[in-house]
Image 1 (cartoon, rainbow, N blue to C red):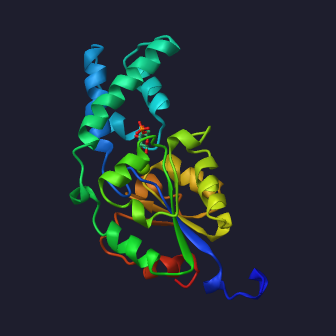
Image 2: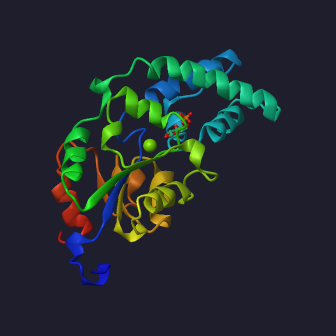
Length: 230
Ligand code: BG6
Ligand code: MG
């Protein structure tokens, strides 16, 4: 039987999660490590500025921070700075455990996992994504993991989400993306995927659906929005 004869609820579908800010709150560790680096170079930046780094790759984040501090370095020095920031960041990541999983993420993952029509993917800009998922014990839920080392273009480019979908053999229009960063929402929309913003309506109003977090919902409820039943 071809897909043509399948009911909509039987078509192969997928959920693709961003990691940082959707599954775990690592922004606080990125902030501490970037701030330590900025301080060592003689300047500081605020938590509000840190918001602009959400979803942004490591090297692009460094370039932005150096711009805020009015500094510039050769590519070689920048690579060293990014390396030492990551070493500092990893010292926090290595202390993480399942207690840092955001509210009801496991409930949502379980809801999807039990549904035979859905695969589960990760679409993260972080090169540490696999380590973080292992650290908090969630790797088992994922059919395919895209991390920052597997893409050439960062968000808002759709490359990461499209790669996750194609590796899971699911069409983009049959994917639901969960994203907390405005640039990540742009990337998911550019991939033509149903996009759920996790955070504030003010920041993520361009998503198809926005919720503060997963605490007051179930996967069945989210799927109703995706299928156009709500
Ligand atoms: C994103 C974060 O998920 O990953 C960004 O939102 C971060 O803040 C980016 O810069 C890259 O992360 P990493 O772990 O490769 O330095
Ligand atoms: Mg994020």
